[in-house]
Image 1 (tube, helix red, strand yellow):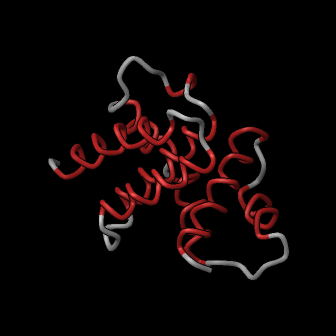
Image 2 (cartoon, helix red, strand yellow; image 1 turned 45 degrees about the horizontal axis):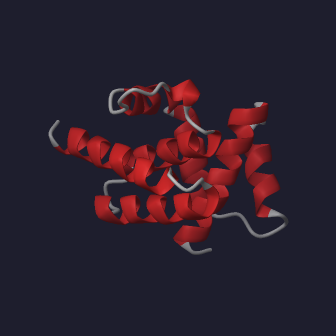
Image 3 (cartoon, rainbow, N blue to C red; image 1 turned 135 degrees about the vertical axis):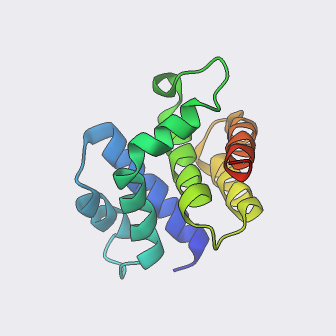
Length: 131
């Protein structure tokens, strides 16, 4: 499975977990739709679930005039996914993570999502780089 596909499916699984409190393993199984499992998909979903408090704090610290609860569910989970990758997947260049998140936001978010995601993730990337 390509990384883009793994990220899209991870977003779908995280959305399910966020909206309906689905068990992570069931959410992953559901989005795979019978396809073979993917290690990167699992790494993202389980990593976000395990590190959710730390990731949410990182996002909250870089939001302006927004609260995490007010964000669209797609945007919130896309930010969580990309923030996880920025913080815990150092083998992937930050610009690649941002580009992928922006492209996925264009597909799954609303008209403003990609600009919003770009702004918040750029701040998160700077925050992590300066620590």
